[in-house]
Length: 405
Ligand SMILES: [Zn+2]
Image (cartoon, rainbow, N blue to C red; front, side, top):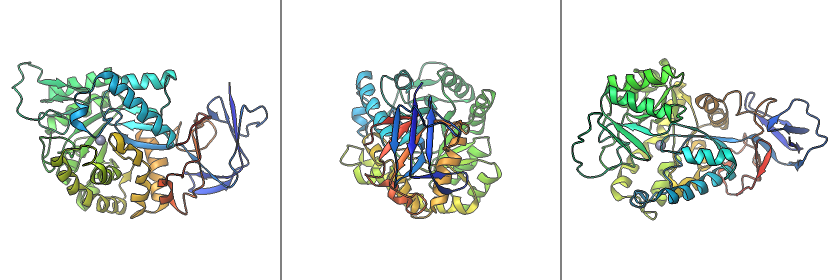
């Protein structure tokens, strides 16, 4: 049993969007306790003059994509992956992100290492392998491939599974769920980081999408889909996909259809800025940089359209490898077009729903996990400042202090 008390400062409550004075926040054995007795605490923290926020939540990360240098990534051994992923996971937690949702790539070993305490890292909700069609956004092979001679039509990597036809998609879905996926991730439009698919193409048929949705529903979970274009987003949500990732080319009609189908949107704007800024230096291929420019410009507009239509928006980043250091930049980019309340609502109200953790994270209420970020920044007055290097003074995970960056 361990007890932590944080005294003083001001506490931000996402349910009311208000800040109130903090007398003593007590975390007992990892959970926040109601009118807890601060006596006998093992850890005492003075937060005078600062703000207490629930731990940050990122609804779109990829620990497996541990470097932006894709040619190098394809040659790494499992040990090199392990070292790079462990580093990313420790840095993510130190930046204040106590919970993340991983949108694809095998992170089974990483999750195990975090859970056992071998390394530090956030709690992770995961999709396991991304499911994609041949030539789709999860098909990481370049060049011409031999026609597969296996009847199941499936190809595997540590990142994704290529599956064509409803039966193969069903099998890939079941494989992922068996491996511990908390939800499923499919690709229904072209993407930036893959070699063989134009951005504007639509991927997967109605039957293939429905097969994934049915398997997820049977397992009491849902399907998330990578999609940029209105056509692809509509194809996904009208066939039961619950969450759209990115959505950069969203238009008003499509936003309305998302609202009608009660679908969520997780925009991920930082990643396009990061790739434009750092991509060339870090070895990201030139042809992919061109695709990046196309979605970067549209991304901020899509936020405005989604917000105006009342689409339920989560908070994610989708940063790859070295650029994950820019994770908190998402606060600043969104602040260009959204209010602080809208941004905080995405992170603390919508993300816990998308991660199926409403009773565990997103508020500093009794019974919830003692995940806390201590910051000099008043989030309601200057949310963009949360992107600054010195914005996080202290991170606590289940009441235990984590070294800040
Ligand atoms: Zn992604």
